[in-house]
Image 1 (cartoon, rainbow, N blue to C red):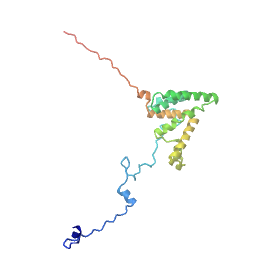
Image 2: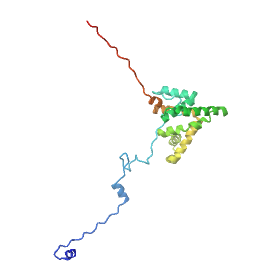
Image 3: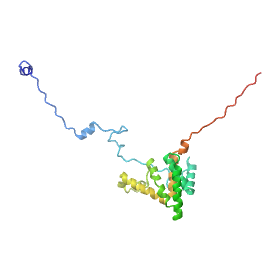
Length: 227
């Protein structure tokens, strides 16, 4: 039946349409037709995308600004300077406690620091052992708040070693070495700078997690005399 219908001269002949040729999809056209998008809703060709250099903020105060700044934290800066001069073990324990945001870490860091401080002064006559224990807090602060390191600041001011700063792994190794050198040769100033930075950015975990109960005295009741 089907063969007869196809060969019958009474039926109109259907013209065969030529098959469409599939055009080669060029990668450039693919990017123009369906561009990728970032999480922020920006196209991949936009400047603020993954891979673009991220600007890092600077420290709130310099390394040798021991007395701090004349602002609302001036009294706290004087306290930090006093602790760094007289009792650096207490300042270091307070810095780590603020950085970890967990009460109870003060003693776990203050006591070992004190032991190394006394041992270094007894054996070598100066504090040369405690910086080996305390310097990891500086890279932690720098990474937590995306702060500019010493090597990056030197490269930005002098315009040298730009290729070294572009590689994240090499830059981090260089910054970690500079952090250790800062703690070893300018130990008290480094502790004070970290203390000023943390007190401006993070509350003390003891005050933050403690509930305050305010009791108001009862109001005076006035009773009128009956006539």
